[in-house]
Length: 86
Image (cartoon, rainbow, N blue to C red; front, side, top):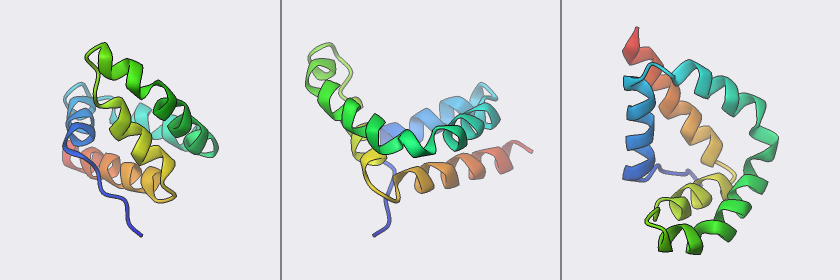
């Protein structure tokens, strides 16, 4: 099973790339990888309230972080963005 990134998550990666924050994001992701599933579950819990407050992408992040391959897919996208910066 391979996780795919939603368009809104890809936009977040592009935003990090434009602001040249891909390297810090990769470090943060590597340091917090053991907590990815718990973070995904907490985001899923907060998603209905976030949707009411105009942030519907929280559920997409929850889905990504809750799948076993989600952090790997995000890391690959961040590495591609970092390679494109260089």
